[in-house]
Image 1 (cartoon, helix red, strand yellow):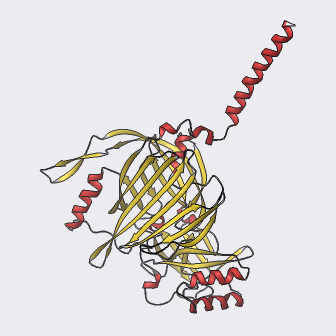
Image 2: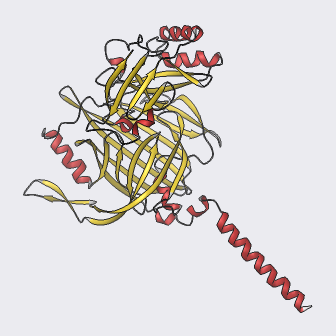
Image 3: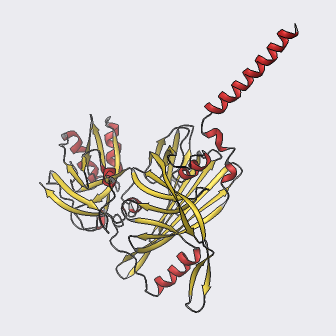
Length: 447
């Protein structure tokens, strides 16, 4: 009958409406990304790098659109004083992202005082990323494999994700696993929006012939959101605009990026550097290798307690908490490192690795893994030296504990003055600088 037919039509219509509503409510965050991709426009921004109040270089972040998604390029130029000279160190990362901001390819170029090397991570399959190392004139060498979920991305994608997911508002948050090529690990980075404010931003400059300098012009008021981030386990504060572009970034231990016109933070910086008006900082923590210094780390002490702070004052509340874990215990702004006894079987492998090959850390990892041990490279600094040199050693899992050994110097256990900063990495200088900035250490107790 017509009544039955009408009931069927109305019922079908209600079911379709309910299905559409349910689909809209339950759809994953990634489903919104395609709709909002127009919010991400290509562009470039430039920044001054400062350590405390001392300018030490410049940086640039470029966002390009591709047929498959986006390419984000980040370049850092950092200058450090070395004797009477100035050494330039260049970091560059290129992240190729899908339209939903998932990682497709990630490369990292690092040139320390003219000694370049090229790291690259590519997906071998849905859950594995292969990391290779190449130096100029040589073939690529496999370094490691990183197990990562299908939704892995890069750290540069985190603020963009807040924009595309519509979470750029007070209380908005996001997190995602990121492939850390420099350290050969998978990290979990997070971000939360705490408040918004207005910034005066100038992206262009004019030449002032009277003062012979570039001056910012056409400054505009830009609404920005304060984003509290955790990157590689370390806290940072970002201010980003409505398109996810960085305006300012502060790390817990004193390093800062500040957006400014290219002519000001590059041309004028180089001019002042050549004329001797600027003196880049020296003895930046992590900028020198432990192997370049005389003497061995002291392995006779069993306990080492140190207070950690920034070069210009106390560290942020909770910043030292990033060093918690393994043999390191944190209480406020102090860290206590205790030596754990190492079984003789492991000590034998440590001493053997110290006598073999040019890469004792790699040799030990291979020997220990072949015997069924779970190991991980760790990188950090030596708190017993005023320069806080960078160093790499190994932690071996022993039940719930991680035992620290140092194949580079044949020490088991490793010296308690070695502060682990990150899991993974290498003893190449400068790899830790963005994380620890102007970190300073005051020794309180040694036993």
